[in-house]
Length: 284
Image 1 (cartoon, rainbow, N blue to C red):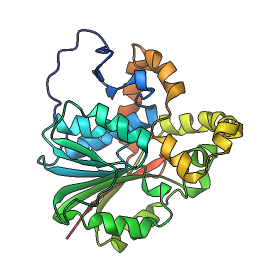
Image 2 (cartoon, rainbow, N blue to C red):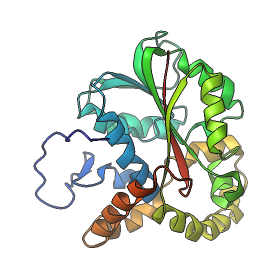
Image 3 (tube, rainbow, N blue to C red):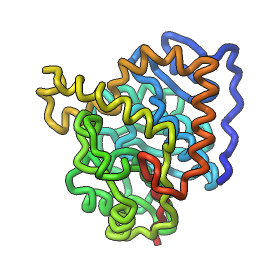
């Protein structure tokens, strides 16, 4: 895979700061610390690979389900793509519209009801299917928006045996095995082209260290009283702890250590050692 080069930007410091605008980190992309959203290390490991995958295609129209903050769509827009983000969480919907305000070629909606069948070149959903009880029916419905010959790029958490408090905190129904993902895609009428496993070894360590933190969060009344849908709604936007840590891991030398972890994970993409899978599939 070879990534396309991002559009040139003039960034005088490590992070471009403006109270009214999205911050653009030169290595880690968009962030909105004032809205308590910054790219998490796990997100960055996935982003590194997803942007490289999109860099192997000619720009086209992207439909992203569960677009969360909209950061990835904003970056794709900077690379010549256009399209639509679908987000049901009101908090995330507002955040995604702020994140993409400088990109009129990207629209953000609460549902996909008015999107045309077979009208998109790319279908994307990152860490979304595990939040949906009927993942098979949902993916089949999503595939209906993809044109023949179009590409689906999806990610899910891997290995059911690694279920931990973070999955409960985020409102997950499941984690996936490689064969589960193959079966899911094929049931939706997609042809699997590749499945890569991301995150090893850095994200594995982070997941293990974070599990007790999420267990303590679950014990708090504000989180304990939320149902699964409520936890799902918060999972992509509640980055208060990471926002406090952002000045540390976005700056030298932590930034360079994390960039090293991004490079290291590429050696293990064909293994099953990581914490998540990325599926690349085609609609015949």
